[in-house]
Length: 329
Image (cartoon, rainbow, N blue to C red; front, side, top):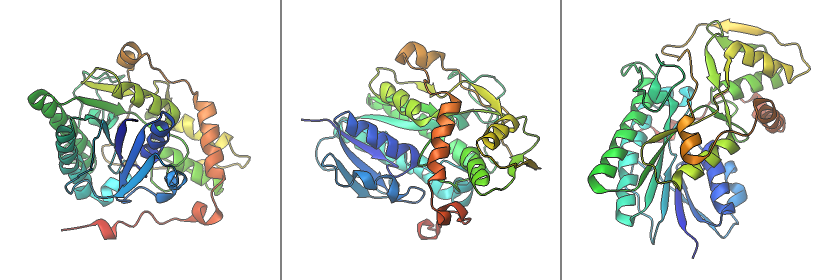
């Protein structure tokens, strides 16, 4: 019988690509999402697949999956500043209560669980590039703290379950990832720039554009996650692309994808926005024999093609996700 895997956040950008990968590898995939930030269109192509089933559920509530379960991948969480600044309490809850529920399910099922952490655990880093041994520089009470601390707590409780209960756990620290199925209006730099280019608008850069990022194409990220899940390593592992670029230079690269003559406009830098972000992937290379294969030029071209295929209504839709149905006291 094929192995069964539960993927939370299955209708999200990264979660939906993970569903594709595990189905292609012959697994029976159970997707779970409450659509607070995910989109059903990301998994509609899987609905008729006999190896895919879907449960609409909020993981901050008790989670039960009938039958045996071999693996759990916990990817349910808002992941962009626009989302987690609008729903800060829900962001904290999915990282704490949601993770606790899924660790409990993993324990009950004797399943291995991989949790999606983030480079945001490093905050605005004082060490460059960032290794897994760096503890981070995070403002716990700043506006971004709800996401940063939710993920830091998620790592702590996961390791507690590993040490106290002997649970098989894996932790991936995900650096900026991009590709098809990103939400155009989610506030992150790649869809923001590409949306502005496709609408013929000038590109908005916050600060002076000297802050740096490194971008990993989604296929590379999924490969790293897959290898980590099947490894025997329980401590956190960075998965990202170490090729660093300034935001200003990146904006110029995006403008070059278009034939229009947009220019860059500058706005004030948001509070606690990190100035440098670059993964040290030495551990992933040694442990998983993994490193990114897709160059930024090729990956951005694929992503631009995806956004270019959006309808005019989707392209000009300015309002962000409506969270009103998900906000509880």
